[in-house]
Image (cartoon, rainbow, N blue to C red):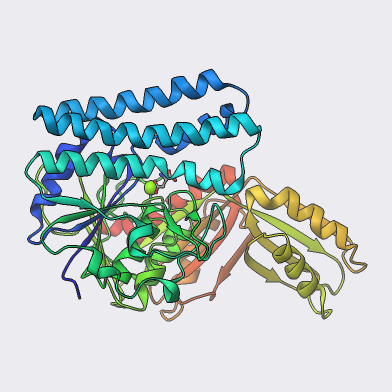
Length: 460
Ligand code: ASP
Ligand code: MG
């Protein structure tokens, strides 16, 4: 145990010039200097993607865009660093990173293509610049800090470019030694390094996952995630009246909510922490008075509430692919052929529901078209029809013990039926934590609001 707490600071906490003031306030709350895992400043990753696209054809644009990023960083440094020498040194550091970035982009312009490994490398510059800037600003404002890079302390990934996982068995077991006790250690999130030394991204929004992984590797006491909202809610305030805050979630509840669309947490955040029992604590950086009292605590406690349901969330990012044909559900081999084909093509299947006459795959909506083509190419004689269905929403109703307490399922389905909404598909029993329903996108809001009312109206 290092005694250090890992704090994740996201892009939404780095929107304005004044944002770093709030971050410094947060850092000063901690008794011992924390480890900060930081995202790129708001919008910078998207900007880098745009620059990469234009780099292929437009050298001038590379120059202008990179200068623009540099100017913004200088503005931040000018605002926070009053000492002339410290400011000049900080700017030299930014310039060095910007020059590296620029060289890679010119290289792309010269060769006329974007090698995959370079795409990953270039996108990390958002986080690199962010960590560098925080480090310089903190130091100039009396907070002792140091930067600790994933490549230094051995945050090893499985190596898939763009979307790697952390390979915990290969991570440096002595990583904690890189994190000094008496300094705030700042780590750029979003990437790790593969066995052959390549910088690999952890997927979009991956800094939550980086932070959770660092917490695991250095055996942190907790992972503290500072957001700009009041923790997990019983539903999205866009869809329901008076959502209530959820004070506690089990790891599985949080994982299901994140998986099915709750934007507050990246779906992979829980993964590294669950089996080692490191709690995740959510705070709001925009609270007037910042205190270390978590708004939502996520840990291994499996206690149930009286009404079981803790939150109703939804995602529009899924689609259904239906394979119809007499007996498809019981003929051996069909499912195996389809799943191994999709697997070979790198497509993830989120769920499968079968019956005698149909097999239904729940997939990412972006994979629907390709998946349909791949399955068609298998030319399976027993499959008479292949029906891709988009424009759906998956609604997830989450609560520990959902299968154990009688009547919860009927309350969910009655609430939806009373509003004349047709449930296209549902599963209950996949785990003791979630029931999900698939409805037409147009019915999403009514369905969510009806289910939420059933379980929460009495509490308001
Ligand atoms: N900056 C990266 C992204 O926008 C990682 C993150 O913010 O978590 O995807
Ligand atoms: Mg994020």
